[in-house]
Length: 365
Figure 1 (cartoon, rainbow, N blue to C red):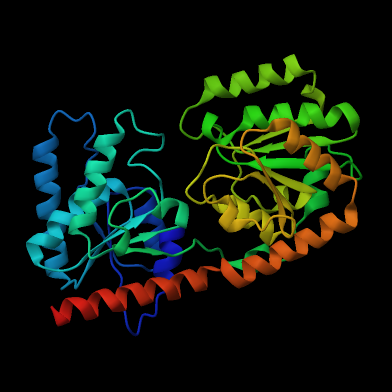
Figure 2 (cartoon, rainbow, N blue to C red):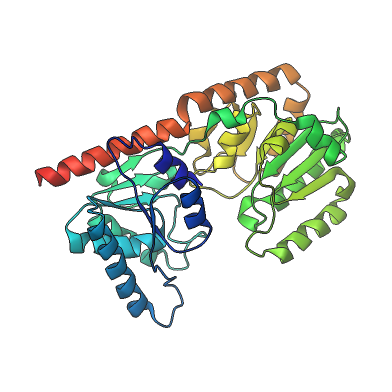
């Protein structure tokens, strides 16, 4: 998880990070990473019958914990956390930082955009600053003068060879010399698996030896969507050319088995899997929307396609598969770009700069 990776890498001679969270996997991972954590009641507020009671109790609990550890600032890593953190910081008269990873308050575009904007404006007004994971995210938030863009990062050494690509192909019965195009992400409509399958169908018309690889599972219960995808492969006549891996703990072997990585989803605030694919030296072909133009350098580390143009995407993939030297060069350039711009160490150092500035400004005030 990105949050824990950042907390582990902060300079602990200057910062003493503590994590307030509910019991569960996050707390368990924090314990394994030796990050101090405090179990705090932060109930879901949406569709709750006790919203005000839960909100009040959570604010008091968070403020109490912050006071006990003598916290000098509070950071909210999610929208739900922000509803508790912003008022708790006001109670304690310490800075509040809002770390934004999404365009909207929810995953999908809001039913009432004005309400989404109004709530974001309220939280932004309280925040000392807002960290956005991309310029695309920043553009969808008010209080532009408070926003600082800090790109997500990964531990690049985890994506160095050997990647066990051939073992992965053997496991999934993919011929060792078959060109493989793939995508990765949990199974849900916004990730674009249906588009991927249609793009693959176009590619197979001229390159029948190609295999498609769909990495990810229905981790939030999207089993109906999973069935729809299987049905679509039958309708398109490509069922024998597609591998569905389900959810995997380690995406590196799957990414390494691909020749080209495709990003066919809806606009995203960042999309960590894109830099993971680049870190395994794979060219990325993606729609030119969301944060992708900030990640992929067109014609250098991959190709950017007009949004939703599946035929153009298929043509671009086919051309790249037919040009191995260009494909390999793009993969190497992508790896170099990750090492230069998207390392977890670079992310942690940028966060440290934000923390220092917020603490300095708070002291001056």
